[in-house]
Image 1 (spheres, rainbow, N blue to C red):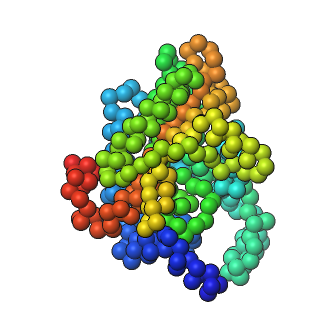
Image 2: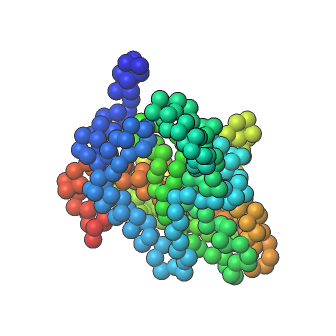
Length: 309
């Protein structure tokens, strides 16, 4: 264990993580990838989120906010379970009697396994902020499709001490629902818009073809197809002393992956295609602190004026 801790001290992210903790920007909770956040951290995150909203100004848009939980039936229908079972967060609760409750308390106090005393609910933690949107859009879309923006918390079970790999984090997504051509155009246009927003904050970005971390052998084929068809792009920025490319925004063409299960159709009656561009609110906030330091008052004046005009 000591050797493992020593190795962690030499990871590229270790000095940055320690600075965030020492300066109180993040507060450790004892679980890797789950942090408390200071008011200064939240002020930056809120400013980044405002920029994400302003980037789409002047467009007719449906704005929706969902809680960090979603119905199991929506989760099951959207295919996440098949593609990323290792990242899901299922919500469980106790439904037993008094004797079972006493046993649950005893096991908790003894640090014993409690799983057989807990029952699944009809809720899961939301893995992507756009997922609760699609079942609300069932039916025929208007001519030209529909634009929506959603923001909120996500959970993915990927424990890591690297601060850029949080288990609980925020996204702000701009989503298009409509024709295949419209979905591609939305993806490409927002890659340009997103890059402009990020570079205005002093974050150099590069657009790269990417793939999602699909699970298992079939997942490797899905990932290869996703890269071959260039369905997913990421905007990466260099972080830490070695300049590790790290995704802080991404854009994804889903084809009819959400249109089909949720019966979303175009004005012509075809199955709708969708695409989204996501600002990684926490990753952008961390990238700003990695580049400009954890003392926000010392940031360059142009950056501060962009965030707090």
